[in-house]
Length: 342
Image 1 (cartoon, rainbow, N blue to C red):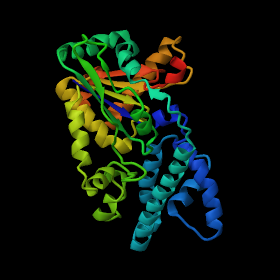
Image 2 (cartoon, one colour; image 1 turned 60 degrees about the vertical axis):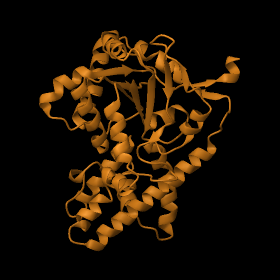
Image 3 (tube, rainbow, N blue to C red; image 1 turned 90 degrees about the horizontal axis):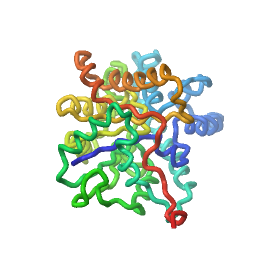
Image 4 (tube, rainbow, N blue to C red; image 1 turned 180 degrees about the vertical axis):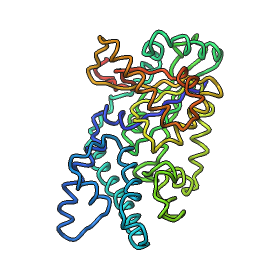
């Protein structure tokens, strides 16, 4: 059976890496202030840092901002030179982000005793979900009882810390949900949007998120799916193929932003066509489950965000909502110090 985890920036942050959008914003704002004094002008930074109190929290917020800037700024109406300058500036932003994340990686102190607790995460799968949804997961497991489980990890992160930790972790073990004739195998992580060293992809989801003042070719430099295709590595075929084979899909540490609509759409279609559960882990620090109305609203907000950003017809909303399982306040892939265990 194929189980697929899609992890985002929240996992890097869980491991202590300051890779969030606000981390980069604060770092780059100070650098750009100095660079501007010696003549550097970047359209994107000029607009971004002019609003010092912007409430952007996630990378998807920033990506939407870039797309919206192409619509709001009148300098792009008739001036081809400015449109090309904007694209060059966007390329520079990607390089700045890569430089920042390389510094973050360099500062991460590796401990060769640290392992990712894959076994614990898989063991807790049915313990984490609300009791109402346990039967959904157990039904999938029973329908795929007499076979090994293979776990795919699609990461939206560019950093390679998770990859290095993976290599020193236990990635094969007896399946705790089946009898001991079968095993669970964790496959190497796959970077959906590239790594810092190869194919760092940042951008919007589609043409609607960019001004039509830009030519088709120019807009394709800002659209993720188009950029992925331009690499000619068949990433899009590989990624969609993994999703279509999955019997359970788990989202963790992702903002479910509109700039990754193409990905949420693939997941939603597969879920509706094959009855595949979508488990969404929504981490809330110091989560208080005491107020049922607050918890109810939180569950609905998570579901609504996925439904609103997956691009499915509203007629499918009720059916899709039944396939979404929200888990609040819990973490996965926690690090274990093997030295301490001994």
